[in-house]
Image (tube, rainbow, N blue to C red):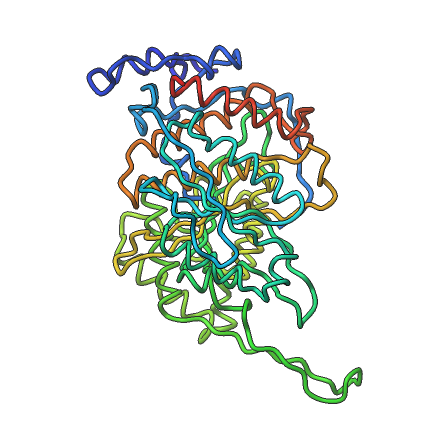
Length: 462
């Protein structure tokens, strides 16, 4: 490792001078892992703005550089002891009213799910405990399990969406989407529509101790349309069922507003990450439909001349990800279904689809976030249920990402400090060899969460 990149946390804290009441303590990041810690060379690479199934890919675990990136400049108060906090877990009554015990704390809507998805949500909630993070949180639980959605004919989803609009912050477990046409379907579509979600951001980033696939090292964010397109399209069939003349038809719909939101926010992410905006839809084949997103990307490029822009057809975008044509950090704007497929392709390039978070955002007229719901980008993993081996990294990072937006939307500055502490703790644990089997390790689900909690407490002085 080059000498100029090495620095102890204490040296880094001292360099901040008057910005800190005391230097950063190296506990939890150096002592717990026994690994060197250096400041990241490009802190914008680790912005927590991103982030269904699929096997994990693991390559060359032994050769990866065991270094943890610590961006103390983005969280100058990371070493300060948290203020005393209260914890309230609120259950929603049968009539949908919130218990009157809720005060003026930070209110987070916790959306329960199914199978292993629910188990991993509980791990994220453990990390968000005020005894760990030192924040005044009120958790309001809504059960979105398949059984409960069927019992209420999706009434619980509508109820949860109403609560999410009011509270502005939510964290969701993976849920089952049943296959039957007459069944309750996916709660994700309903939630996204009812809170006026515009974009979903999922960012693949380097997992310490894991060698990425295809030479990918720099962060890649997929900025996806949250509503419309193939999801929610009108579908029907004509002709005699089973005959060769039977025809299946689908009418898809996207709006100029959705295209503009994806385009504008992609360039804003690119500006923060110092990344290029790369990719796009298949506008040559579909100039009217997919061409609308291309038009908005071109217009956003004119508004952001300082952000590099390389429009590439969607099929060539996939090729660029595995051939090395895409070099450096990138933001890939996408239609709804394209983005769903792309994120499931991009995230495993870094080692596992469970290595990054997913964030759904609603905006005001200036594209400032007004509501945020975070989750893991993977599914319910029924084969791992009850085995205590599933990777909780994505769900824990979902909590960290949500706290970033608590800071941004609610003006709770300390939430940003805690967000960074959780993020650094996750990377530090992985760098220290605490990894679940999908990343080639032997740690259990709870082992990994325990390691993260230990590091967060050490960083925050709890």
